[in-house]
Amino acid sequence: MKARKAFLVLLTAGVVGSAAWLVFFSPVLGVRSIEIVGNLTVPSERIRQQAGVPDLHPLATVDLAGVQSRVLGIRQLAGAKVDRVWPGTLKIEVTEREPVAAIPAAGRFAIVDGHGVVIEVKPAAPPLLPLLRVDNPAASDPATVAALRVVQAVPDEIAPKVRQVRAGTAEGVTLELSDGRTVVWGGADRPEEKGRILASLLKREKATVYDVSSPDVVTLK
Image (cartoon, rainbow, N blue to C red):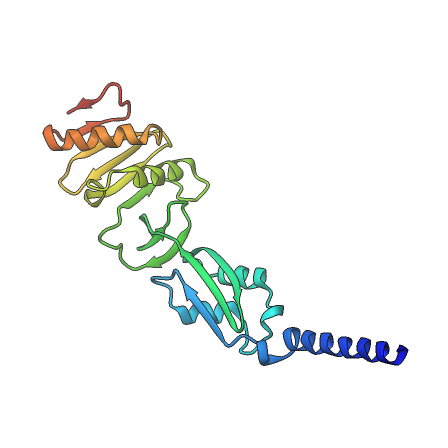
């Protein structure tokens, strides 16, 4: 009886040890594919290379946090989620930064997202992005932050017409439209009211300057 119990213990230990080896050390359950989802402009192969996970590396021992950190080293990406999909797939779901404005800088243009993070630098500004003109362009600059918030608050039907956004201060944001009209937006407060009023005014009132900085007292010039 004792011999039988000892045999069963050894057998169990052997099975457990084999399973552990199979999962944590063997290439049998290694990474055979890396699935990339959510990317539109960043090539999947670039994300795979940045992930830095060798083929057949045991899936169970992949450092998910480490992979996430490396992938987020691609500045066009705002977020990344890494998961194991058994038996051999590493899934990386990414969120790309959305460009909202172009900032002129030394003859080139820094393309930034809504938080002021530089996504890339181009020799020419994309035609659909407004130019952002501020004194101290930076993600921590109050005028820059306010201007970017305003850019994102402009109604969809007006956004394609915005060519330049100027902000001397956080409370002094001004929009220049493609048809030559100017919009004094003011600060980033009450964006929905300002957007709704502006959309209505542009349709029914002819003027060169639309001041919606105080939605309660709108002025035209």
